[in-house]
Structures are given as C-alpha cells and as structure tokens.
Image 1 (cartoon, rainbow, N blue to C red):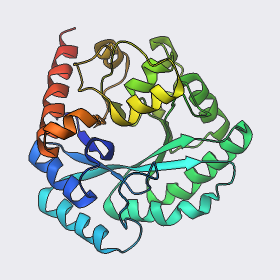
Image 2 (image 1 turned 135 degrees about the vertical axis):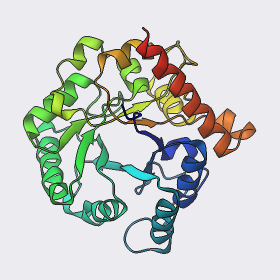
Image 3 (image 1 turned 45 degrees about the vertical axis):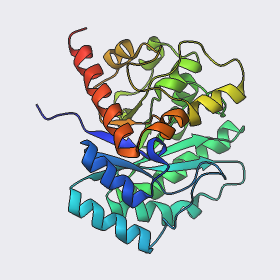
Image 4 (image 1 turned 180 degrees about the vertical axis):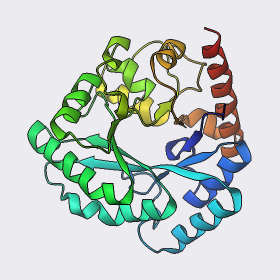
Length: 272
C-alpha cells in the first residue's frame, strides 16, 4: 500500500518563502506542500503569489526539481462583502501549480449568503479541478463540525469538502460522533497537529495557540489516536506553528521533527 501523502502547511514554516518551503518539504521527506497564496493576517510576510510572478515561477521550478506536489492553497475567507469572482486569479494560480484543494474559513454571520457564496466558489473552482473545503474554527461563523455540515447541505456541490484541524476540533467541543455527520465524499484531506491539554478560556487564547503555539503530533494533550481512527485515511497537512521552537530550530529541523512525530503517531494508530 502506498504511503499516505503528507504535506507541509505554510503556517508551519512561515519564516521561509513559498519557494523555499518546497525545498524544506523535500529535504524533510514530505510529499506535498500547502501554499499560502492569500495572507491570513496583516502581520505575516507577503509574497507576490498570484499570477505569473517571479515567485510563482520559482515555486514551479522548485516543484519540478524536487518532485514535491501542491496539496492545497489558502486561506480563502468568505465575508459579508466578499466578491467571489475576485478569487478566480488565485484559483487559477493554484491550478497552475497543481493544487487540488482550497482551505476556506467562513466569516459571514448570514448563513444563507455564506452558503450561496460557498456554492458559487465551488462552481468557479470546478473547471479547474479544485475542491473547496470549509474548515470549522471556534471563532468563525462556522465554529463546529455540525455547522460545517449544515453549510455543505445548503451548498450541495460536488467539489465541496470539510477539513478537520485537531486543534479546532478539540477547542470547539466537537465529538467523534459529529464526524459521522460528514458525507463520506466530503473528506478530502485533514490537518495534523497537537495542543496543550488545558484549553484556552477566551478567543484571544484560542487565536494565540492556533497561530503561535501548536505542538508536534503526539506531544500534546489531544487524543489524536482516537481522532485518526474515527476518520477515513486521507492526505495529511501538518500545521504546527510554534514561536518558541522557531527560535531554537531551523525550518528544516522543525519540519523533520513534525513529520517524524506524525509517522510515529500513524504507526501507533495502526496498532491501537
């Protein structure tokens, strides 16, 4: 049986450019990368990553040289004032690089408008052979798996999906039973990380842990074995940002540690 694809998410190594992220992934043993073509916050590095830019051409060269593939592109946000058609150049860039998945956050309090825009984005992405995956996050308007499933029901698109982030799953109060509500054809890939056993008490704490203090798979307090056993086998994107580790370990050292821990965890799941 072929080894499960494992991707290096952009957030894990935001201290390198997208082109260098490909190199880090290759040297650390990843099969894929997840590229952040749209910044998630105003404080992170910004690169010219939409269209025929020098950075995109360099990413293409690195992908060809290393054999690493692009799993997903991020981060798309649906807000009240979003014009979905404006995402088309980003989708086209992702398709050019070989991406098959988009990671999306729901930031619109109107569930009907959110569903309409989600469906429209799916329709625009379909000819490019890209699926749109909603990621439930506790501080967004799609905070849980159940709310994500409701969105999928309303949108009802062939190329829609739902992506689990273990940190958000744990902090959002989701249960393993909730996973059974997700249509089987909506599982396309998942993220992997760990977190402290103690949960943050407010949104500020949730955001800090999500963006600055994730733990390597198997080194925290989240029951990842049970979660992985409850999910179908699918590609993994390792998303483990940690500001403290970034001060003491290079991007390659961190990436190697994360994938080694992930492989040990996956082996433990086989025997659980």
